[in-house]
Image (cartoon, rainbow, N blue to C red; front, side, top):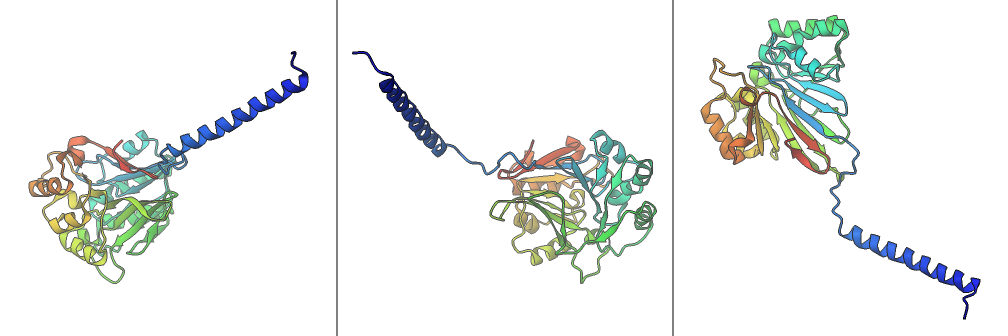
Length: 305
């Protein structure tokens, strides 16, 4: 019996309906087996790079073409060449943790780059270091000459850099007077998850000594971080075992010059770091590895690229 056009249309509709139902069922089963990492491909990671500036410290933060700098290393260490080679033409802010030459000296040389238009600096951030002298005078002179706004940080302040990322100042406190290493500005950088909980964190300590570390632990009872910038280039006067055990970092980073005359990092500090991290390969040093980076990914945490 020949099939009429009406029956053909019914058969076609029936086949189409079955196809839609099957596609929906297949999609449901597939979605039930798919792992959601929490990252939708939106925000880029925050890259944390410890620059090789010899016996000194300079930490470059990068996110979606924006840059900021924690400490500048010593002068005459080629910081500007390093920044230019990395495509850095503008810094949201430069933070000088304290007024020692191996941490703030590089800022003295930024003036020429600012004047020539090769570099823009949005703000200069400093702590409450009471030690005054050539370095502090020179840093402020550059800021004044090139009209770079200056902000003073203390515990409780927040430094802004990237979406979903928070930089908290943990030290120094506003009611104390500190000079030199103990005045170092301590920053906790953390990636904030969808539920406003901390996913991963790194801790920048400048040259903070053991007395400062102990005060910091008293104020921040839950102090911990995945990555620790080791204080004072790994000297014996920093990195107390109790402090390291409290922070419990997965990775440790040391800004230190090759064959430096101070013998940094001290062997006892390196041994403590190996115990705390559980792996000697988790201790990174600019004298051995050159410049090195870490990345903080939304929904993933801290990784070594």
